[in-house]
Length: 242
Image (tube, rainbow, N blue to C red; front, side, top):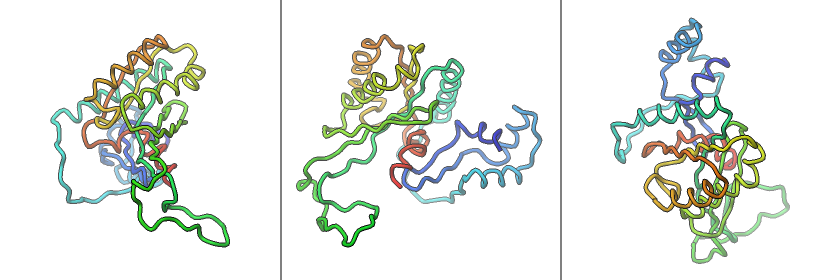
């Protein structure tokens, strides 16, 4: 079972709301990898049973509109896998980052229940104009240590805010957990404040993290429409959403 988990480490996606995880590898392909890499001969049926034990779920087809499928999509996944293996072998930190859904601050309805004599009364409509503030939760998940930090700010979800959160994580956590490392791999979605397009994200990373702490930064973005493959989605945000 542990060998199968290692094979799936770089090919796992998940839903941040339900915690369900799945893989794009077929049982036949996993069986082939187990035999090729580890010399283990197992059938696809056995792999299917192991996937169930590891709590991977089957996903059926769903009609939906594609937002654009890039021809180099799979190549980018291979690049990310290579970088992760390289940084892990060297003992250098790898973080997965993303912004969680913004939350209205005030008397608004939220999921969850508490033991009390009477239900707390909240507003019957969620109007942004009536919020005391709008919280922007930004997460930094450390893949090696399997732990994360969630920074909640009241500013807009901007590249500057994203970089400030990453810099805060390194200043308060990262540099003490990795005292001999001067490299950092950042995995992020292709859109949003830490996306591939905003030049200010790269500019602030250079000024506020690389130059300030004397670090070498590598940023790798997941392809468009592949946010659920970003580890923070199913390893950290799914726990917060429970």
